[in-house]
Length: 122
Image (cartoon, rainbow, N blue to C red):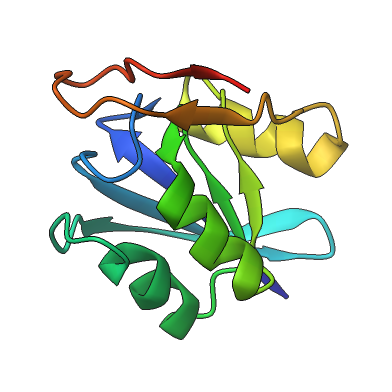
């Protein structure tokens, strides 16, 4: 069993991890989605959300963009980070499970934006 979290804005992947509406959690067993749950964003504070998701047993995080601090914490916790994702959440998770979703390593460097990441790829 694996737990995947997707930074979400409605049914779409959020442009920025820390400022998303919430997270859609997918429980996956043998590459099949067995459960889905939405949880509101607990609040954007440096380092809090990565540790929060780790405590919930998340093994993969998918987002449009993400700050380097969050990526570092996820890496330290052994959580796979996929950035640069766009589109409908469930379709993106299916792409991940099929092995066709590739991270762009997109790192957000500006936080003045509303919804979409103003950062760039590295």
